[in-house]
Length: 210
Image (cartoon, rainbow, N blue to C red; front, side, top):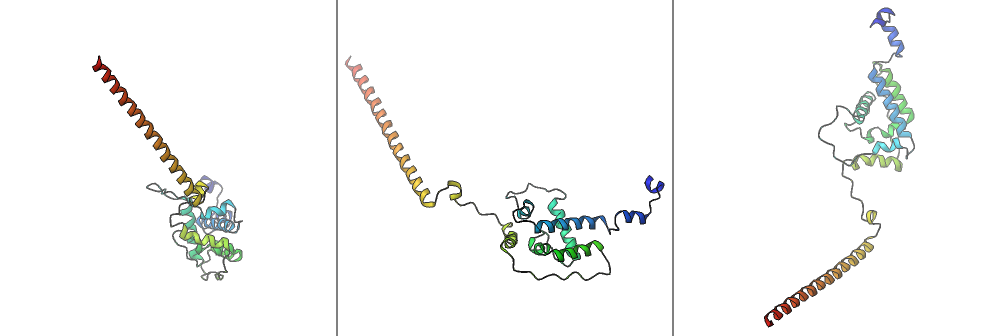
């Protein structure tokens, strides 16, 4: 506050230093939307783009933080979409904004309009028609249903490196070997028991003869 008093910083000078932004929240949202657009237009194997559809297949512990990166990004998306006539659900699903973010001219017009926050500008930019999605975009759209369902378990061959027939033959051989070992063990036990009985009988007979 001493700088305001000593240097006589006026409101006009303050707005000039911040480039006449309507609010700090608008600036934060604008930078987040610019970042999302760059991620959506990046290469398919880029780590940042892969993180758009990544999820942890593990239940969260009870309770949650006050805010998270995903929640804050979704809130910015909803404010940005509401101002530009885009409906964004509570989950920030890709199908509501992904194709638009890849359209550089349309997303750029939305960004400029959002930064200005002109009260007289009440007509949002015209939303372009969706082109036929490529395979990589179709993968992103399928995430909305895939993420809500538990992923299927991996097939057996991914663990054993064997086909179903090979695994069946292997376990049949394993069971045969186990049965053979059980027979041998059981025969040895019977022979040992019989020998003990014979020894006991001979000892008893020799005792009575004496």
